[in-house]
Length: 181
Image (cartoon, rainbow, N blue to C red; front, side):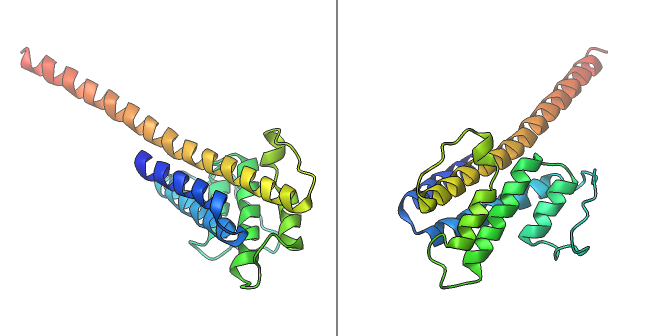
């Protein structure tokens, strides 16, 4: 798991440095959706803590990006500010995914980038140009959201290893006790 995620992060950094805005936004969206899928798979037995009421009263279709965000929110698997930005990144991704003509961060995408909260929380500087600012805010929010998702995955793996190690130690101690009889 560590090696796969490390490779994916390296690929994403290369992509952000060399590819178009469209490619960057679509790739970040796909990567975040995959990370949410992995988190939800690991915590599928986690009970929903706080059911979320949606504005229109409908739930998104199962196994969509929007559904994964809602499930993670209801199970409180990630901080709310991370989920707000992941949902905003999903909306920016949709601008590019549903229009072949969208190449750069247009007015609608820039407006969404202004809604991102993680860059502000991290003390990221504000760029002067609207395009540079939107690009910077998107990349900063993407980086911070991805880090939060990966930290959650690694935290789960570390907890699992710790529990498994304790179980093996108890079993070894029990076996040593049984052998002494």
